[in-house]
Length: 324
Image (cartoon, rainbow, N blue to C red; front, side, top):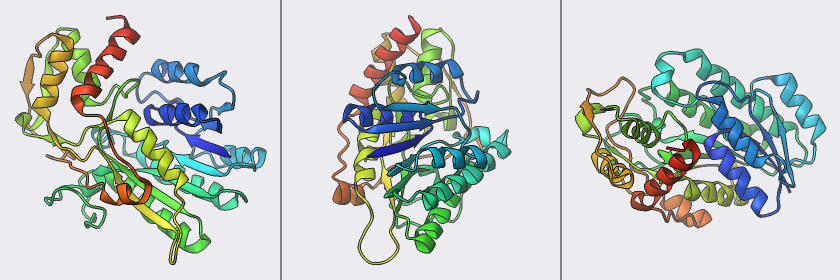
């Protein structure tokens, strides 16, 4: 089988490509390697993928219709699309909203059109986000919960991706599955995420900003668990009666206090953090917690990595990669 992975130079995309190649699949990766965060980290990830048997890479923007159509014409053998490329980040959506409509709306429809015209495409799996739950109070968040009140533009675009995917599944019988990711962390992670930011600042002897005075909780999910879950989901094509469309939560099914996460980083580094408490930021939410029973039932997903294991793994990678 041949897999197209968008966002191949990104955090999750890189790990998904690695796992696909490890099991002998053919992988076509695409990414525009933009500068939302340090492109050298993305290039380093690509360096690990390039040269591996079965991997081919194209440096294109998912919203570039002509480039994506040409890719589809060149590779009609694609059987699966794992669409992970997107403009990420809640806070950045307050600064540059057009980046989100470009990548998350225009880019998503371009990829759905590609899936529609590929004769052999069996399944379209894409990244949604736990942000779609907004300020919902019921915990854990379940896929059956209403998600009509986003508190950030980022969340609104991710909900739009789910709606567009449902339309394409209904109109064209394209099997689509959305995965609502919950706070993914681990080696090769994104520099705008809290575990990365805190580790960098503590090592540099700089203060860390902790929002809502530290009264926050997150369902931190380790990257190996996420990548394995993405592959298992891709292998499980929605079937049966009705529209071939599914949405799942993919998380650790454990909500950890932010302050405990910081203490695990401190222990792994052997160094205390200087903390500056800040108020809640616009678009942010106090707590996330994933109900993953549907994904467990349908694809056998079972997260295995607590933060007490995952964070030290990240810290070891960080110190080795940056030589600090």
